[in-house]
Length: 280
Length: 110
Image 1 (cartoon, rainbow over the protein chains, first blue to last red):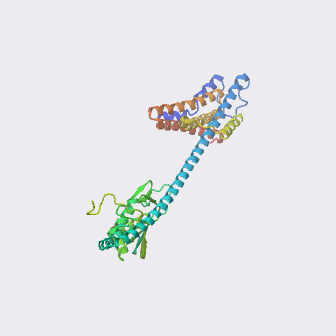
Image 2: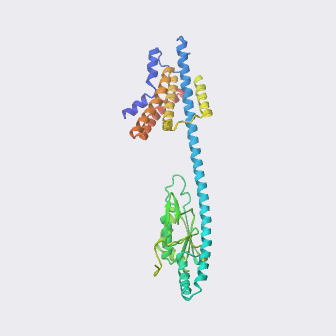
Image 3: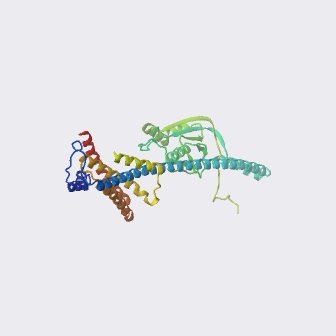
């Protein structure tokens, strides 16, 4: 503590007091003081005064430089951020274009396959198998009755000083999707991203990635299933959990039944390891 | 009066020329600024106390800035740079505060 007390007591440089004692001037308040130090040899005093002025000018330049450097640093950081955002946007739209190309091409592939397989009996039976499996796998767009579950961050949960308790995270989306599948959903998409058995829902840098594509709130989860899907999900443990979160943290949570929902096909269905039975 | 003009000239020069700080010196700029602020506030208080001395000011200003930068440099070499710069800022901050309080007492008598 004594260091701090000492610091408070002797805040002014001791050199001033020593110099004053050497000069023989007593510390006097400004109000009483007459013209300072008259009768001293002017040359020395003048030079010291010029030195002080130069030092002050240096101090001013230092302050200005620091301020300018700080502002320039901020501006540079802003510029970098804008560039990154622009890059993200352009790359995302490039990915979108490529995905559209993929879906056109896979339509062509599937129509070519249909015409090739329908030539033989064995092919026809394969075709019916494919038709059965494709909707489950997410390889084709599907339509049917279902529910639309929307999840949204609580209002003000992104404001400064918020503890982030009202923000939807990846595990919320995962449990919602799992809850829907448990309730009997056959096809699910999040913000237009169809889920397959291989789709990852994860979080990176505060953004939720579905199939490695960043999504932003509100999150719309479309699920096709039996007409009781909505009520089953709402009364399930997962549904009740979201209701509680809605009441406690103001999290946006709605479940709406829809007579006709259309889900897109998954962007790419790739099988890496599994091979059809009987193939070499 | 001359002091105020000198300070203003310095600020204007800094803004107009905005000298680029070498990358190696950039970590020491904030510390140097705080040290310079401390010297300036100390000088104002000394003026009000009636014990101001030009030479002491020049020496204390240059020495303050250099020593503060040196301490942080030393800390950087020893791996405690950020802790030491915090220490420098705290110590100089306390001095600036108590000097500002003394100046306030002089000016407003309160």
